[in-house]
Length: 142
Image (spheres, rainbow, N blue to C red):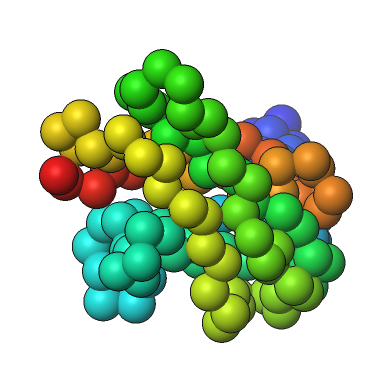
């Protein structure tokens, strides 16, 4: 009787270990990325543009997608949403966009700081393994 219980317990353990070792579904996973060497998401080109980077942290290639920046606390009369120019282009697994995507910072954003939310794959063009990590909040200190 004890041997049967021991065998059953061992079988349950083997099944549990096997299931936990099975990888999840493969696919791309796009996230906003910081510029190399920059600890924040505020990277500007000196001409009034916020520079954006996108990383594919998934394990499959991602097709092109669009990026959007919503600037917060913008003065009345200025549009807070900027669809970034450029788009990501295809990104291999683990790759960060090499081409810089830029979004014009609206006049009046620095009040005193310029807060924003970056959202990658804004129109859900890419079927990702995680759709919940596409946005990040950042700020440029004024």
